[in-house]
Image (cartoon, rainbow over all chains, first blue to last red; front, top):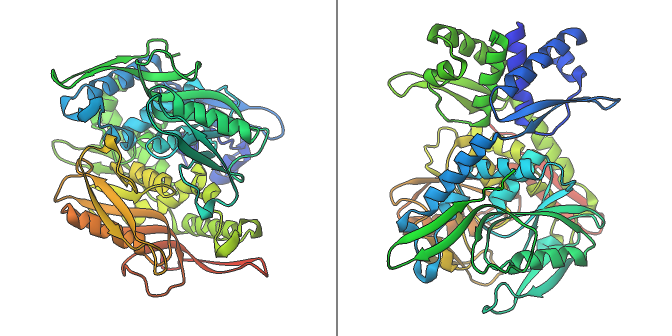
Length: 269
Length: 269
C-alpha cells in the first residue's frame, strides 16, 4: 500500500471511532508495515486532519499509548451551526399555539444534531464526565451524538418506571412554576455511584426538569459536572439551575406577528 | 499540501458525513488544487477506504455529481458485532424478574449502537426510505445512528401526545396478547404523506408495537419499506408482522439456571 492510501485509511479509522485509542501496533499489523513507517503515516494523518477544521489526532504516550481522534470544531464552524439553528427557529410555520415552537425536525435531523453535538463535545471535553445523561425524549439524539463524540455511554432518565429497567430510584419534581408535579426515575444499574455525568438536553425554559435531573443524580450519589442545552428560553431569566451552557437563546414567540426571536450564545468557547 | 495529506483530509471529510455528496469543486477550492489533481486524490481515497472494511467511496456523475461515502460493513465485522451482542445478552446479571433482560446499557452504548446501525444501514441501503422511524424510548439511539449513516431524518412516535408536537394522529393498539390497550401518536408535521419509512427498534416480542407503527403510518399515508430490530424474541414464533430483519434472536431466559439463550441471525446479508 502506498503512503497516501495508508494515511487515508488511518484518517478514516480514527474518525469512525472518536476518542478511542489505537496502538501503533494495530496499524502495523493492518498494513504489514514497520513502526517507523506507521509513525510517518500518523504524522501525515495529523496534518491532514488539522486542515479540515473538524478535529485533531492526539498521541498518547506510555504502555497503553497510541493515537486517537479528538473531535473539535473551529469557532467559524460553530458560529455557522448557531446561525443556522437560529434561522431555522425563526421560520414562522414552527409557531404552535401557546407560544410553543415545533422543533422535532431539528432535534431529529442527524446533520444538525451532529453540529450541536460537536459544540457540546468541545465545550465539555475536559469535564471528566463518565456518562452523558438526558431525560426522554427529544434530547436523546443530541445527548447520544455528544456521547459518541466523547466515547461515553448514555444514561436516559425515564418519566415512567419500566419493568425492563430493573430496580429504580424515583423523584417527584415541578417542571415549571404553573405545571403539576411530575415523576422521573433512574435505573439503579444505569450508572455507578461515585461517577460523574454531563447533562445534555434539547430545551430549557425554567430549568425545572434539569433541576430534577440534578436531584435524582444526587439521590444515587452521582455528580453533575456540566449542563448543556441546545435551546434556552430567555424567559424566565431566573432559572432553577445556575450553571448551564446553551447553544442558542430563544426570545419572544409572537403568534400575532408570526415572529420568533432567536440569538446565538456569543460566549461559546 | 502533499498528496497524502489531501487524501487523508478527503477520507475524513467524507467519513464525517455519510451519504452526503461533495462535488469535486469543494475539494479543489479547499486545497487550491486542479481538478486533475483532486481526481487522483479521490482515486487514492477510494483505495484507502476500501482497505478498512468500513465502507466505500462512490462517484456520482452528472451535473450534481461528486463523491460520497457509503457506510458498509464486511460480513466478518458484522458477525463479530452479532457475536459480541449475543455474549453480552448471555451475561447472567442482566436477568430481571419475569424473564425480562436489562439491555439499556447495550442500547445506550455508542460503540455497540454504531455496530448495529452499520448492519441496518447496509441491509436497508436500497430500501428507498425517506425517513427512519422508531417508537420512544430505547430504540431511539440505534434508529438515530442508522439514520445518520443513511443521511435521513428520524421520526419518533410518541406514546403520549405533547403540545410541542402540534396536531397529531393517534391510534390505540395491543402491544401484546395479555397486555392492555396502549396509545401511540404521530405529529402531522413529522413526515410527508406519500413518503417511505424504515422502522428500526431495539426489541420485538410479539410484534404488537411494530404492527401499531405500521398502522399509524398507514393512517397518515406513509409506506413502511423495511423493519429492522436489534433483538427479536424467538417466542411467540407467530409475530404480528411477517417481514422483519433481526440482528440477533433471544431464546429462553431461565431465571433458575441463570442462563440466557441468544443466537445470531445467520441470514444477515
